[in-house]
Length: 234
Image (cartoon, rainbow, N blue to C red):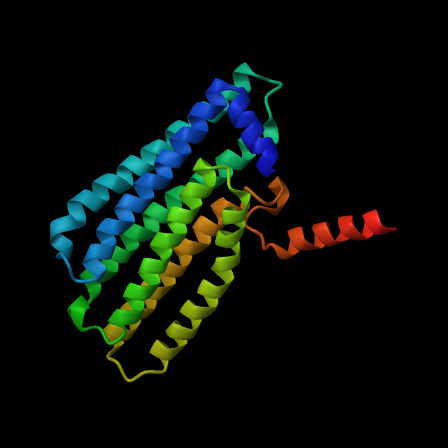
C-alpha cells in the first residue's frame, strides 16, 4: 500500500494536492495540540487559549470535508483512478479530524478540574506522555512528507507501548486516594492522550498495511513477510 499510495501521489497532480492538503491537516493538528499542551503544563490559562483552540478545531473539520470532497470529485472525473489509495485517504482524514477532537477534549478536562493543573499529583506523568505524543505526531508527519515507511512502522509499533503505559497509569489513578474530581480528570487526560496516539498510529498504518488492515497491528505484516520468506526458501 505504501508504494502504491506514493506512486499515485507523484503520478497525478490532483492526488498530489490532496495528499499535500492531508499533511497540512496533520500540521494543523500538531499546532492545536501544542496550544493545549501549554495549558496542561500550566504555562498558560485555559481561558486564554480556548477561543483559539476551538477556531483551529473548526478549521481542521473544514479541511477534512474539503479533502473528502476532492476525493469524490477525483474519482468522478477519473473512473479509472486508484480506488484503494482514495479509500485510504478517506479513512485517514477521519483519524486526523479525531486528533483535533481529542485535543479539544483535553482542554475541556482542564475546565472540569477543581485543582490547578500545576498541582495535579500526576502532573509530571501527564506532561511526559503529552511530550511523547508530540514526537509521535512529528514522526507521522515526516513519514508522509518523506515517504518513510520505516518511520511509519515505528509509529505503529510505539502505539502498543503507549497503550500499556496509559492503561497502567489509569489503573494507578483509579486505586489512589485522590479526590473524585482529580482522579476522574487525570484518568481522562491519560485516556485522551492515548486516543490521540491511537489515531496517529492508524494514520501511519496506511503506509505499511493494505487497505483492509488499516488501524491494525504489524503482526499481520510480519506474518506476511515470514510467509514470503518461507515460500522463497522452499
